Image 1: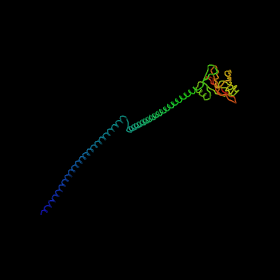
Image 2: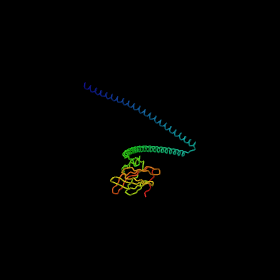
Image 3: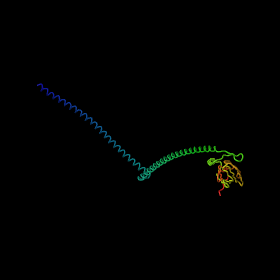
Image 4: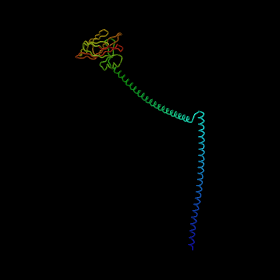
Length: 279
């Protein structure tokens, strides 16, 4: 009897537990349903408010369009313009603004090109300055070299008392004298018995002795003759010539052998008359 009595009690406990769980689940469902209903109600209220706001905005927009249309019509009437004319004016204004923008772009492009050109010009000027600096350096070196070369030339007293000058003993030294620029120089070669125009004078070789490096030379100038007899190499042979007598100078650098010739140069003042055309 005790076992039979305990079995119904176990069933009754399980049933009560199941009922309790169902009750809790029911209560939870009711709470969730209530919460969801509240949220849905809030969303519906917000949606309704949004629809009302959209309706108001649409109404305001229609009212604004109407006012703008009235204002446009009144403006057209006051100016005596039709809607088509207003549209045309608007298009013209738009075109002018586009043209102004295009002009502004062209101006900006031109300014950029000008700036680039100025930059290029500045670079070129810098290059020119560098080149000029190089030229100045070269010129300074050339002047120094010329001064050194001139200092190495021989200074000798001529055959006229009290006059000494720098002489060139060969062609290279004569080039140095030419670069000095204070006198004119004419190179010549004469054979025995030959009379030759050199500059504004004439020269005639009467005698040449290659063993002793001696020679005799006759100078014709201003219808006068000057004989330079038995002279030596690199000796300045001086004479005066011209309406306003100026000092001329002859230097013989070499005496030939078999053909009995001499070679040298004539030194004349810079302001002396130009030599006549050779016949």
